[in-house]
Length: 345
Image (cartoon, rainbow, N blue to C red; front, side, top):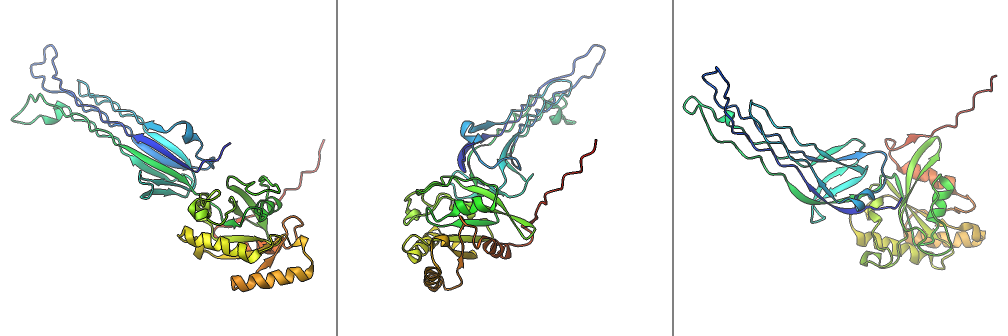
């Protein structure tokens, strides 16, 4: 399944049905009077967050959603049927924006959360509604209210507890593959990760979700490379894990590049808690590790951890550091493997 996190959608609620002008005429009934019924209400357009989706790809193939119009009223005081609603089923974490892509209409962050996007028009009144003591045979009825037509944008921001940051080939996908059941693409060339990946990581009997996004490069905020297109997927994270490639030749410069892009992106990303890790230490000796760690700590202004996703060295310590920065309400109890029942004939 392809990944899509931004799409434009056209919606229209149903118009209300017209009221009916009708008079009761039956044999042997002297006084008939008006009996025109009301029109039915038009269908509304809703958006609902569901659990089984993690992409907006369905909206690439269908962008127009029009609710049904209500039926007109009928004689014998019969009200027209209301039009059916339309429900846009979106992944959890979807933001709904107005046509300007800036005005936030709703942010669906929980399963089952719903929001009304376009209310259906009310049905018009039939002539029975206009009967009074001085006007006992009204011959007027109201037309139904028109539906609402609008253009909206759906933008998906993945729900994750921790987010991975780093330049291309910093080892983010390797770390995710080593600590979870996710299987992101791993290769020895840049930009192997083209779309965000999610993995469930377990440590000390708890689990949390880690998001891996494509690597940033210098100038990403100006559109270079994949740009900062996917940075929105780590906005909801409680903590960021910044992986620095120890074999790049200039780890300090790489660190400053990512920090500069976070600050240029704006928002709350630059202020989120960050854990900085010097990665790929399996290729270094003890002296080189210590030298690069001291240099990076001076640039960070705080502690730097050592890790190798390939050899698993230091991975558990990094996971525990991430877990300590995540609120307990986000954590889930780790699923234990159940022992198989003994065989019985």
